[in-house]
Image 1 (spheres, helix red, strand yellow):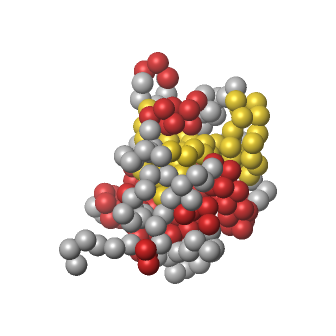
Image 2 (tube, helix red, strand yellow):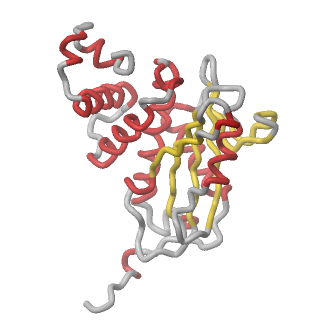
Length: 238
């Protein structure tokens, strides 16, 4: 029940009613209630809704995520990134030329994401290229009342899923003196037959090395770049 504050509130504190629900059912209801708190549009695509619920479930064992303020902040950023990914998926090369370039740079991704978060009402929370965090300069920082959450941005040409451990470790390094959750957004530049699906591009990486102390949680996002326009795609043998 402690991990389901919105559901508990919705049932007017009826702990027995919440306890009687299946674990999966209760977590999905909690995710739906959280989504309604942060969504400005009630017509949320099914794949976004399901991926959001899955990510929340994978974070449910994370201690800092049990705090209402941290949970709301992380949820808001995760949901915004899901909508950002979906927004980019509909862009043509004439609309977002950088998504179709083999030599796109991190700055392309940073500019696009920064302005998207502004449009989502986070303009008073975010800043970019901020020095003095974890001994380095962070790409995008999201400041809340008592904590900050960092978004680390990278580009990678690997054919395999380019959310690599070395990048996750760098993202986690900014968490040493703050809540132990961060975001890693990677612009993938490998040339693929088609764009990967949304679900496969989001994940949670847990760094549980005892030398780090408290386990670090990194929400990972792959933004497929170097895309091929649908009209240019062909299938052999058809």
